[in-house]
Amino acid sequence: MTSFWILALVSFAVCAVVLPLVLFVARRWHLYIVAVPLDIHTRSIPRLGGVGILVGLLASLALSPAFR
Image (cartoon, rainbow, N blue to C red):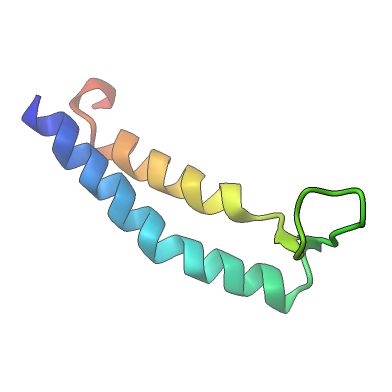
């Protein structure tokens, strides 16, 4: 059970570091969805947010004993 919490903390830490970098790239290269009047969002939403989360998931899977 302890290894689960360590993997969760690793995933969180990697996401916390990678997501701002991914969002910076998305803003710099204009990779975002422009909000339209019928949309729920009032601001533009970056398209690459899932990439940062995927990197965090892959980092925790790489350290998981089940995948060694």
